Length: 154
Image (cartoon, rainbow, N blue to C red):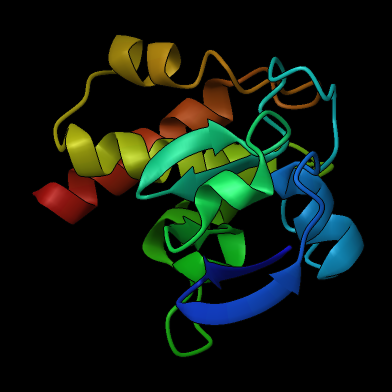
């Protein structure tokens, strides 16, 4: 079946089998590798994308269920070829190491700060609980999100 996906502001008409997940369609059909394939059980957060502005595990969402809804991958954060301020904060704070978890962390953090403009460290940690990282120990990630929220929201 053909379905129209709205990915990072761009409409894409895609032939999709009804049982295929959004992650499969993004990676295997469209060649969009921003969402990483991790556990395929919705536990690790590596495949996180924003669907209608909310973080979702794309490995658990059927692609046909996203028809007409805006999907944002980490590339959708950049503006005019520049990094988003949250991406810049991750770099400044050393919150990016191997990079596997980074897209999911960024998107989850972005959505969280949009909904909670003045979070404390405990709230940031709680918001990121569904995103696993094996490299950073989370402190640098929380530092980056806290810095972004402070500088973004005053």
